[in-house]
Amino acid sequence: MEDNLKKLTNEVGAPVPDNEHSLTAGPRGPVAIQDVWLLEKIAHFNREVIPERRMHAKGWGAYGKLTVTGDISQYTKAKVLQPGTTTDLFMRFSTVAGERGAADAERDIRGAAVKFYTEEGNWDLVGNNTPTFFIRDVHDFSDLNRAVKRDPRSGLRSAQNNWDFWTLLPEAFHQITIVMSDRGIPASFRHMHFYGEHTFSLYNSENQRVWCKFHFHTQQGIKNLTDEEAEYLSGHDRESHGRDLFEAIEKGNYPRWKMYIQTMTEEQAKNHYENPFDITKIWRHSEFPLIEVGILELNRNPENYFAEVEQSAFSPAHVVPGIGFSPDRFLQGRLFAYGDAQRYRLGVNHTLIPVNQAKAETNSYHRDGAMRVDGNHGGTIAYTPNSDGIWSAQPGVAEPPLALDGALYRYDPKDDPTDDNFRAGGELYRIMTEDKRQALLQNTASNIAPVTANIKYRHAVHCFLADPEYGERMTGALGLSFDKVRELATLSNQELIKATLKAEDFPL
Ligand code: HEM
Image (cartoon, rainbow, N blue to C red; front, side, top):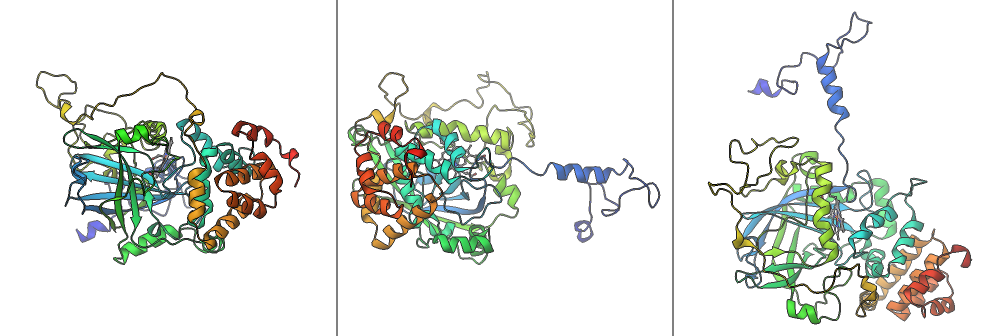
C-alpha cells in the first residue's frame, strides 16, 4: 500500500516508466508518437482551463454549517430553518468585476453564495455584501457587466464606461453610494455582512406565504480598507481575502455570521409605499425588524481548490419546500441564468460534481449527457407517468398560488409614481458620521477622476436629489459648479440624460 502511494500511473491506472524523458529515436533523434504517456500528459494539460464564471470569477470557498437558534416555523416549513436544526453547507465568496487573476482588495461588491445541503435537497442562497443592487431589470445585467469589465477597444477597465452606465440608471444610486463608501473595500470576507438582496418568499405548513429578505451579519465586526491600504495590499498580496479566509479556518478561528430574516405580509406588500419586489429598494429595519434565525459558521477548508471551489455551482433556482421566489423581475431572470451558465461552464451533469451534489436522494428523470458518472440510475424506468407509479411528482410540496394582476407589457418602473431612486441613498448619507462622509466624497472623487465632466455632473445631480448637502459637497469634491448642478437638478431624468450626453458641453 505504502509503495502504491508512490507509484505514478496513467489515467487508466497503468504504471508510467518515465515522466521526464521523451521516447526518442536515438539519443539526439525525434520523439516517437508511441510515447503515449507524453501525449496524454500534454493533451490533458491543454484542457485544464475551463471557462471562468462570466462575473464573480475570482473566489474562495469553505465548508461549514448553519445552526438554527431562533424559531421562524410560523413563516416557513423548510426543514433547514426549523428550530434546533443543523445543516452542512459550502460557501463561496467572490469579487465581481475582476477576472480569475485579479486582486482581491478591489473596490467592488463581494459575492457570497451558500449551498445548504438540506435533507429536502440543496438550497442555494446566492447573495452579495450589499442589501441592494445597481439595476433592477434582468435586461440590464449583461450591459452592467460590459460597462464595469473591459473596454472592447483598449481591453482596459474603463471608469468612463462604468460611470456613464451607472449614472444613466438612477436606480443605481443607492448601490453606488455604498460601493464608494468606506464599505466599498471590505478588509476581508470575514469582516463584512452579506444579503440575499432580493425579496424571496417563505410559506408555512398551512401554506401561508410571507415575503422575505435574508441577512447575514458578521460576528467578526465590520472592517474595511481605505484606497491607500488596498493599493498597498494589492501590490503585496493579490490573494489577501482568500489567504485571510483560508488561514483563519486552518487556525481554528472559524468565522461566523448571524442569520436574520425580514418578513412582509402579502397585504403589507400591496400597500407598501415602494415596490417591495424592486431589488434597488430596501426594507427599512424600523418598519420590518430583523428576526433572528441562527448562526452560519465556516469551519473546514476545501482539499482541492479546482474540484471544490472552481467547480462549485450555485443557482437561485435551487430552493426547497417552504422557501420560494417572488415577482422580482431581476430574480426571475437569475432563475434561468445560473443553470444555463453552468451547463456551459461545467456541463449538463454539473450537479453530480461532489461539491454540488445533494445529500438528499435525487430521483429525477434527467438521463445521459456528457460526464454522466453516477451510474445514470441504472435500469430504473426512464419515463413518467409510468404504471409502476415510481418517482411521482409530489403535489403536497407545491407553493401556495399567487394572484397576479395587470396586462402583459414592458413596464418601466420609472413610470411608477412611487418610484424614488434617491431616498435610500440620501438616508444612508444622513446616517453617516463625518468621517464616513469624507471617505465617501474622497473615494468617489478619485474613482470618477478620469471621467468626463458631463458624467460627473449627472452623478453630482443625483447626490443633490438624494440630499442637498451630499450634492453640494460632492460638487465641491469633483470641482464642478454648484449653480449648474442646481439648474440640472430641476430637470426630469430624461431631460437630465439629454442635457448631459455630450462631454464637449461641459468643459472643465
Ligand atoms: C439578473 C441579474 C443577474 C444575472 C443574470 C446573474 C448571472 C450570473 C451568472 C451567469 C453567474 C455565473 C454563474 C456560474 O458560472 O456558476 C453569476 C455569479 C454570481 N452571481 Fe449573479 N447574476 C445576476 C445578479 C446577481 C445578484 C443580484 C446577485 C446577488 C444578490 C448575484 C450574485 C452572484 C454571485 C455571488 C455569483 C457567484 C456564485 C459563485 O460563487 O459561484 N448575481 N451570476
